Image (cartoon, rainbow, N blue to C red; front, side, top):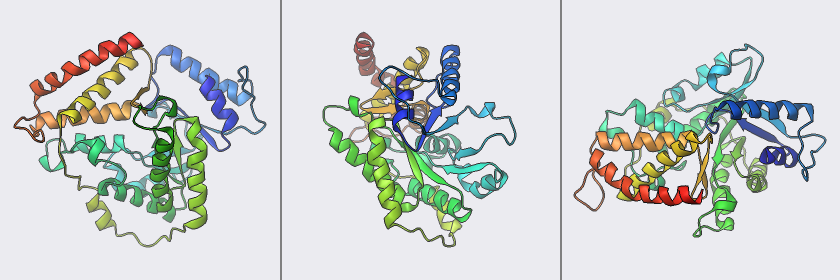
Length: 329
């Protein structure tokens, strides 16, 4: 609740309350979450040492999809998190034309949908995502550009993903200055492409990211031209090529298991190596492991291939790490 109060007090644009990817829907979590929102809308939510401003940030609630059954009572931003939805963005905006607040592009849910929907095709096998998959990858860059241009053509807001860094929990090899610079570089690319805004997890990143978008708005002007849809939509289906290493497998095992562990304790997010992970990163980790096993993907610089036995072998170091982690927690 302290983080919620601080965001409402210090952020002058908007605060998104996540009841979806970042929420573990226990009775306690859901009840307290809705109670805190109710108190915030009444101006009654406060903590010692945290002073609310007269005009607090715009409060945006992200519910689970099955809760949205009150027609016309909300405005909705649609997260294009499935590869098939990327081919129907015009149709989605048209259907929501009376209560749309635009489209949003993420990264990991969308990428996981490619793995899941084309799981039996070897030409859709994704390599190590830490090394080869980012918003600079062609298939994600064109997805973002197509979303932005589609929104601009219809005068709808186009927003991009969340900066996952938690500055107080960065690994030793990454300084806060480096993390901020990395976050700004990524968001600068999105802002110059025409994105209207993005999300941050850490309150300390609000100002640095805000500066990027303010600067980009004053220096960039996106000319909305006719979209070569055939080019864009073909590019969405070309995934990057690269290697899979033992470290890739171990990283995915660790993220997936660590998220499940925290979920069982009623927590919807977990910080790993200075980045917040939610169900989206747990899902891409799980999906990649399944895909690599299914296609018996070779391990770089070795004669081994990923199979069930190999994944179990990679779980052994994680078991020792988990024992230490649980002891610290």
